[in-house]
Length: 96
Image (tube, rainbow, N blue to C red):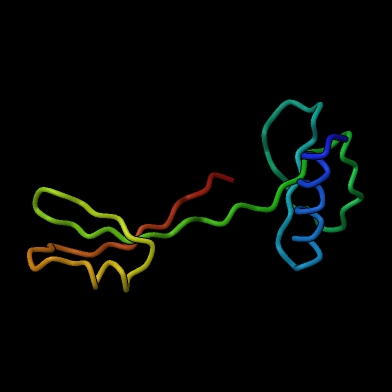
């Protein structure tokens, strides 16, 4: 296992210890369906592991001829100009 692979393994296992959801994918099986890990055996040769991705959220200030992007609603509101049409919350959809 390379140094980078070891760092990734430590990060994934620490996330599991911290209560985050971890997923695995069999390396030699056709398909790309990540499965939830309930009680991991940590077989890094046969499986890839990852921390389940969290959907990203951000806010859009919509104007007649422009759109601006912000990490949170407070910043979107503070930076809003008087001609803002709407402020929209966007949440990423992660395919299962």
